[in-house]
Image 1: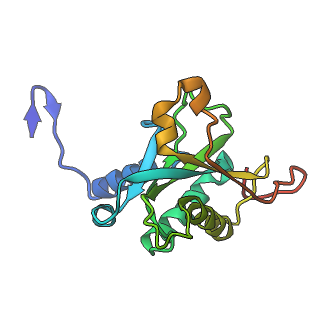
Image 2: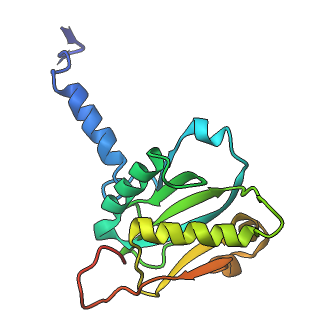
Length: 184
C-alpha cells in the first residue's frame, strides 16, 4: 500500500521478537537508560501485607548488578525472601543522587513486621532478615557493612541527613580489592 508517497509494509515476522527483545533490555539494569529504577513486585503479595517498613540496601559493582538482580528476582518469585514485599534496582541512567557511577544498588523493601511475642523486637526481626539476605546473596562490600533504612527516617529528615541515616548496620565480609569478586 502506498500512502502520501510512502510505501507502508506489513510488519516482518521478527517484529514481535524485536519488540520483546527491546522490552527485555529495558528490564536489564545495565542496559536501561530510560528510567532510574526497575521495579519487581507481586501485586497479590502486596495485597496481603502491611505497608512498607523500610529497605535493605545491597550495593554492587555495575559489572555484576545484572546477575545479582536476576538472582533477587528469582528468589523473590520463589518466595525465598521472607517479608520482602517488593524490590527495585538502579539502572544505567545517570542519577544525580548517586555518589559512585561504578556502583548500583538493589533495594529490598520490607513489609510492616508483625511482632509475634513481647520478647521479639522489631529490630531483632529485621536483623535476622538481614543476616538471611547476607547468606542468600553471599554479600560482601568495600565497607564491610550492609545497611537498612527505615522509611520513617526518610520522611522526617532533611536531605543532608537522610542520605546516610541508616537504622541498622550489619557487618559483612569485606570485599578484597586485590581479588576478583562478584560484589562491590
